[in-house]
Image (tube, rainbow, N blue to C red; front, side, top):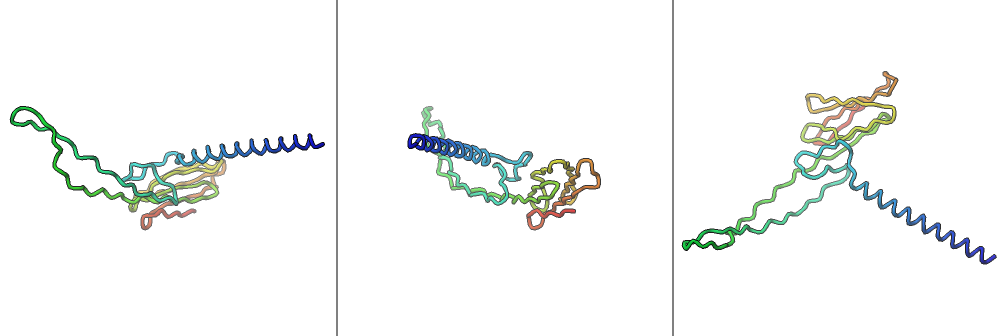
Length: 175
């Protein structure tokens, strides 16, 4: 009986090892994919060359290293050329990064809307309708926008999400 018990323990240990390795690899792959994922159709915030941030994340400041001074060549009176470094340049002030817009979202039974503001103008980052629902997007002249969700086959079932900006942050109103 001790032989079958030892064999059972080996099988159990092998199973635990296989499950642990598989779970670790799966978690790593999903984590890596999640870090690189962005919402489809998300515009890059104005004034930024980087990818947009998601809600709750704040960008970190990066420090740039100035390039070395250029080396120029100038002809001498004898017709030969020599190289000499250009005069030392005064350090230029680094451009200040404009703050990246904060993305906020609202969830309803019909779907989710993500938005951000630049000044007093609200911008749609993404809209995702719940299964069975569709949506229409419309922009108003005053910097606001509206998303109307409609349940398929039920015209009276409608959810409206209106987005406006207050103090540079999106504010959602649902009807």
